[in-house]
Image (cartoon, rainbow, N blue to C red; front, top):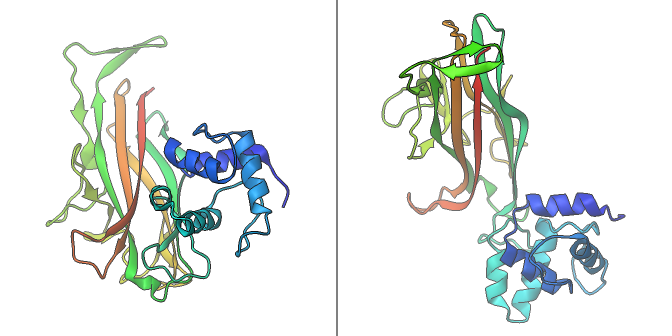
Length: 298
């Protein structure tokens, strides 16, 4: 495979490696240890991937994905550099040929497919929504992948403030305050059925269907495939891969208040849990992402 330097740099940055982890990878690949993924680092990784010294095959593309990272971790541990290997183990990796229950997550990705934006017909309805996709791949060598499940948590809120347009200039009404709109989030409540969010406390994410709470990632329920929402394991509910498509934000029908200013801030926490562990010690991997949007109804 040929080297696409820009693509490899982007991929490695999206993996979220810290400056420390990047420096460890650079040192292993005989690149300058700057802590930043640059063209020289990608070229060094590409050269390393082509070396006949390593026992497992991986794509030579300059990208430090799960397979390449797994080989680096294994080589570091083989020469006693366990502290550096431990730093790298906090990122998804695959030990090829090893059924490693301490490393069940091969890859975990989150991508925004539609940005959080205000959309309206300027008369009767508006929405401030976006769409993201989560994809989880478990280590293919796991003897029992069904013990691992996905969970998603959410916190944040939405507010509105009354105002007026003068030409292209918006001004808040005198004494106008931010009014909570968080009941617009269709998220089941703990203990009782309901909706809404907390600003400072995580709440398990899901949806309300005919008054019933359906939370994301549970293997025991049937897969969900419908417009704007996908919640399923592949190839079936006991499979080693999981995909979630989530339409997030709020949508309102009348009353439409021209000049109302809307603000949303949301944080998500995607978790992989081991269902065989005691409650409170089940999370084995997590990743957080955030959204914010502020706009005014025209």
